[in-house]
Image (cartoon, rainbow, N blue to C red; front, side, top):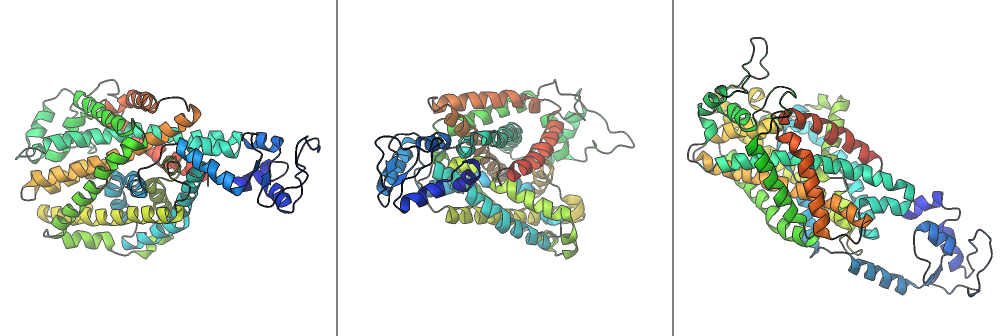
Length: 506
């Protein structure tokens, strides 16, 4: 890909130079077409000569212009030795899987499948995976792994004018992290409150406390968008102190702010030593949520009404496949879920040896992500089916997506089980681990881009500056207008910018 791009940007391509070398002729690529003193008249077989002008435009050193294949291999090994490396291939795969599997697998994929034709949605989903997702992931792995540099430097190495493409990928990823961590802050608050025999959202105490606050806005007779209908809704409003619109953008919520600060501290210590610290963290944070999900799945499918929920999830409606919106939703889910177009995977791959199989790694990571999404969908809808039967309502009234699923529908469903605090702890611990893995992978992409531009900067200093900047910018989500800001940012960053930045390098 790199050489192909240079074939359009350089006056004489590297392919032509190499072809002349193989023919035993001297490359005459020069603006003056003159041979410099000391250059051999003929090129030995297996050697490649690049003129200094070519090397200068190509961004490489003019030293040792004559190199055999063995010398090139030695130089590549030296370059790999100068860059941090993952402890093993398993650690790299776990890190990439941890980045790909996030909260969207739990609350977005099941809802999309339910909305867009159930089992029929899997057709555009897997077509998008094999036609778009895996090839793009292979390309990103190849770019990072071969060049041994991060996203911005990769595009700059192709041509200096393309460095802006790298920054157009990395900057939205950083901004996504700022609001992504607020969801982890809410998960932390719910996890702490789960350590109680009587969960606070199972009673009307939250509603009573909410109605007594100064920021509670009673719903009007004609507007039901802010109506609270039970404990989970009241507890969420009481936790984030939500107000309609952006009216409360200047009022901070102290417990959300403390939780937000805690998440950023955790993220910092996950990346402060680069891949050395991140590689140790993923050994726990990746297997743990998978184990917790399977525990919840086993419990969910044994509940009364679970079959009804699963039937709604996998019902087949092929008429939906005629809608462009269905195919767009499937492609968007693939892009955002496996992390292509976000600068994460090239950065992660740059810490690999050049000899690793990019294609095999991409297939393993992509299929693992899709498998987790399907298992998460079965877990969610088996529990939603149970809740719908217990409440005597239809699946359409019980199902939700996004934060409403995680912080309203699921807490209500879990509260109906025996020993609800145990399953509540498992669920929010799983959600927290999924979010942490994705969050520090976003920051690692930003750190890698900055470190490539400033190679002498210490890793822990770069990570500290990035995390402090992210915490500062994200404080707006800790206000009483945080929920509205979250919805606004998620729509424009996760959907519009990610698809745009995936199209640019593709």
